[in-house]
Length: 135
Image (cartoon, rainbow, N blue to C red):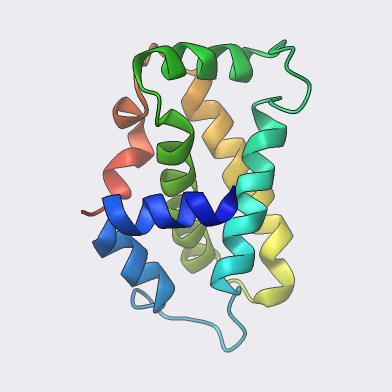
């Protein structure tokens, strides 16, 4: 699934994808997060956060995601792209190193959950962090 998410990211947001792949933006630490491994972790985090493995959709976040999915069948892929970009922004802001990856991932998840549940959004493109993505 993560590979499919990365392919979608590369095809639909090539500028952001290549910028992240080549770590082109900002002052980087010596020990960066591995790109593909970060993608796998983001996909897994989204499945957990959206409660997709249980199929119950019992949380506010998972309920909101179902609404987004009704409007956009690519909502999961778009969330993945946005989450990856959010992770990198937080990475740079914190000047994080490889050992801080899980902390940054957790912080990004909290921000993503807040954006999903605060206010009324009808598609991923209306979320505040979506504007970070470049085509």
